[in-house]
Image 1 (cartoon, helix red, strand yellow):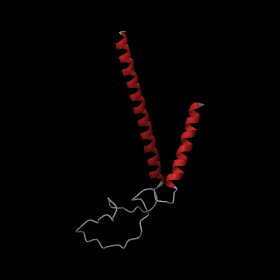
Image 2 (cartoon, helix red, strand yellow; image 1 turned 120 degrees about the horizontal axis):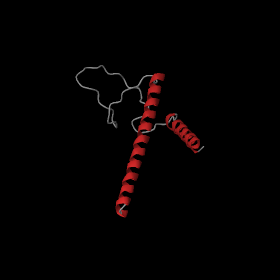
Image 3 (cartoon, helix red, strand yellow; image 1 turned 90 degrees about the vertical axis):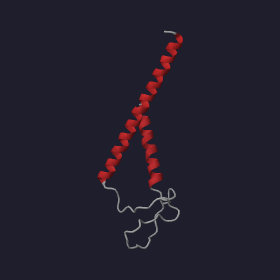
Image 4 (cartoon, helix red, strand yellow; image 1 turned 90 degrees about the horizontal axis):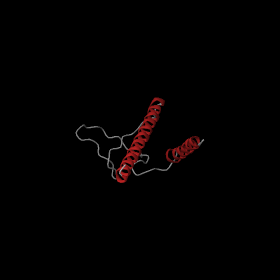
Length: 110
């Protein structure tokens, strides 16, 4: 029952974060504002375009929304990263516990 409660709480928190962060109409951070339409300049091929003032990188416009396959790939990739992170954390905690147990055993002389 405890695991089910943890799962439900994590799903609710994830849903809240999704709704708050991605469904917001306000800009999230500097550099992610909706860009105003700029006149297209003919590409001369001599010099790459420069970032707009206040930006440290060149903005690349994204046209369209991700396809269902891309969304599924992102979801599976996120799940794989969470599983690998949990496994790494579990191994690190086990190794730390083994080290502490070995230190206590050597201190007690067993």
